[in-house]
Every structure is written in C-alpha cells, then in structure tokens.
Length: 89
Image (tube, rainbow, N blue to C red; front, top):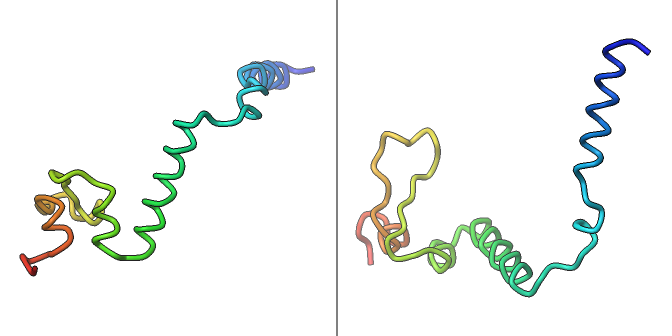
C-alpha cells in the first residue's frame, strides 16, 4: 500500500464514521414535518408564478431581487410591491 492509498483509506474511514445511521432512519418530528411541508409549498408557489401565492410565505417587510445579476438594482421594498410591481393595485 502506498502513501496515497493509505491517506485515501483513512479519509474514507473518517468520513464513514461521521455518519450516524440512526439519524437517517429516524422519522421527522412534528415540527420538522411541518417545516418540510411549508418549504415544499413555498417551492411549489414559485413554480406557479403566482405572486400572491408566493407572497403568502413572506413577511410584510420582505425584500426581493430577482437574480444575482441584479445585485446593484434596488430590491422591491415590501410584500405589496412584490405582488403589484409598479404600484398596480
């Protein structure tokens, strides 16, 4: 066995030891299940493209920029500005 194989084997053993099998098989708590449900619903709302549905998951003082390419542009100022861009009501 050469030095590289020994270091690789040691690293793999350390990585394998860091995983606790029981953690992956335990059922989620009620709180975790509710959190997962909320995140799943929010993701689905983004896919729908419905601004009101998306905004139902955020706070009133929510700020939004559409992409990393717009970092210099000011964000929308709140939930209503996100739902009604340009002040349309």
